[in-house]
Length: 326
Ligand code: GDP
Ligand code: ZN
Image (tube, rainbow, N blue to C red):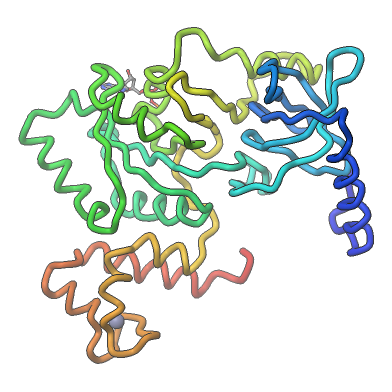
């Protein structure tokens, strides 16, 4: 087992060794497209070929979406020797409460809702904050619009207006009829995106609508390599979209739970409150009891919904009681 904490000297030694190895010409660039503990499936960035690999002991965990340097052994199997700096890393506790790397380098989170199952506004608030905290851009995706008549569609648009007002983009789609799918493809282009949303909103159907037929053999392949048999553990998997961009399907994070949050992310997730707050009398206004609070004025005038205001205060309360680093 790797030690939990390395001292500074050990860390420097590892960094120096890693730096030497990156200069090594044997090492090739690759992208992790699925991971399962210390076993990863990677795609060589030059040939596009896939290789089952082990991960060098001192590297620690590697996640789907990681950009790595790897070496091919004589038997065609490989070893991951180095992980490139990450733009984001999604960590979630597993069933035993141990932190697990779910996905690396996500830059866009598709918060998927649908008429059925009925969406919950405060869950969406939290998903937006969690996405910003990664950091990644949240996009609100309304699926199953084929089920809505004109009146119901307007009700849905009114429902999402709060987030549009906070600066979040919305895309309306139907995995069934294909409506809006081209628009969605354009939004996915050039990004590494993650779908989240309640079970049944249509995430799998959307991935299927975006992908060419017959493209999900990775999980079985990785279990085979790790000699653990073909058990059904579901692992995060990265898909390349034919129209550009990558989508990561991370089964453990599909039901929008709350990831760790920071005050900064909460502020950004409530953009309309942040904007109004610039006009509060006190720069450190908490928008509760202070005089000349522009946020409370905006709520009174209906510029900010009371629901969003309450949701913001609740989240700030939660942060205040949360121990640092928890
Ligand atoms: P997931 O749990 O989020 O992955 O949802 P699924 O992709 O399994 O879809 C749940 C159910 O919704 C299935 O019965 C799908 O056929 C249905 N569904 C998915 N997308 C649409 C859509 O755009 N329109 C309609 N009418 N049904 C859909
Ligand atoms: Zn205020």
